[in-house]
Image (cartoon, rainbow, N blue to C red; front, side, top):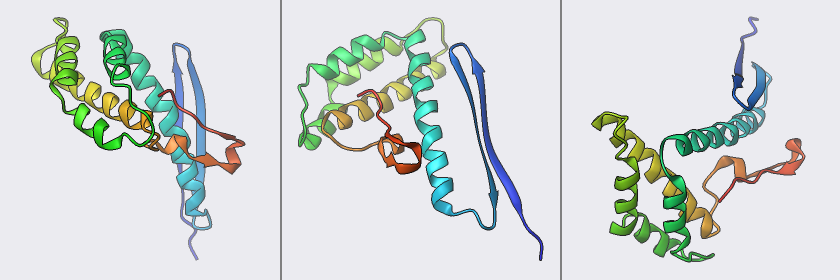
Length: 147
């Protein structure tokens, strides 16, 4: 019998982000362990996407616009309407129009901002939109991400 083995690794040594996360996978590895490992990566990576996004756009302006919506638990329908509203689109278009980037890059930045706005508005409604929000007993704590 041949034992297949693999691994998933993340090594980060960038600015204030120092992380080494790895898992060895064999035929006996429980898929739940793999799911938990991958979920732990998403929180870390998503946080760094947002912190780097803040370096190139005025994310506070989008945050303020989203906060002004006054979303609370149960407002998911309103949140979905607002994500596609002119008000949110205007702010996204304004802050993604960074002259340091080409038009195709500005469009990409706009898509990152739309994703950010979607996640933030749905979280404000009490919805779980990130795997990192799941309580993983092996991690010893409830992983919370910034709304």
